[in-house]
Length: 303
Image (tube, rainbow, N blue to C red; front, side, top):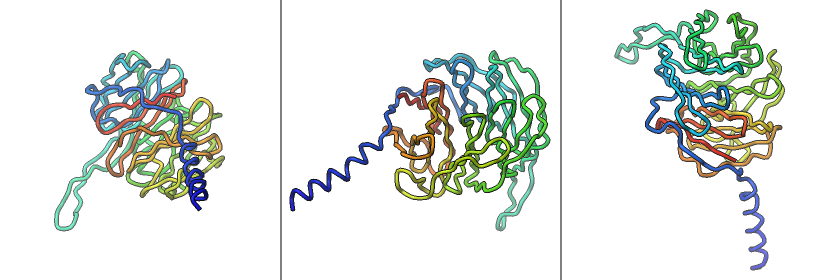
């Protein structure tokens, strides 16, 4: 009986050991230099572009040193997109105020009414500004091929546009179940996009015509599942095709294979946010992973 017990214990422990990803925390970037971080993106030469809610963009070298900052002159900025050319697109959601009655009190709320996009070169010189009248808000943005893709939280849809002109070319909306004011997606291989459909507890990959190519995930507590009230909040692809997913409350970072299977958790990552909050993520060409937190710095994970 004693031997049987020992064998059972060993069998249960082995899967746990095998489900750990070979990554570790290397550094905290921007500590004491950043405010309220809204999004991050990888720029030219693996630089890290950090966007703050007040419109400031900080650009960090791969070694974590601050290279430059850009004062965009924009406010209420939640989305940033970088192009292979080095251009940086920053998106500001325009709002109007409205009085609404909540219970017995009147409150002032900000209603999204449109989006303005300013484009900068890597030195911070403003190249142009576009008023994107087909958008109500911008929570995330990516340049995928010749397309500019923006997550419009107000319309609960992904809007595809010509990257140069801003002219709309398509929309992806079916099946999106958003939650907690979070709406994020990432570029996936072969000019496709992967949406963190957190209300559905799935990651879904689409082509630019809106065709569903891959989906995985379900609500649960297992290593392959997504936990909590709504997850994942964000995701990113590694250079070898593996997929990084990010969960909040509690923070859990995992790496799946290219088919959305065989998840492995990265240990040693601190609690990045409290409650239902967004956690931005980005990956560079070397497979390093960057995560933002509410404490005003970036956590860098290295393989």
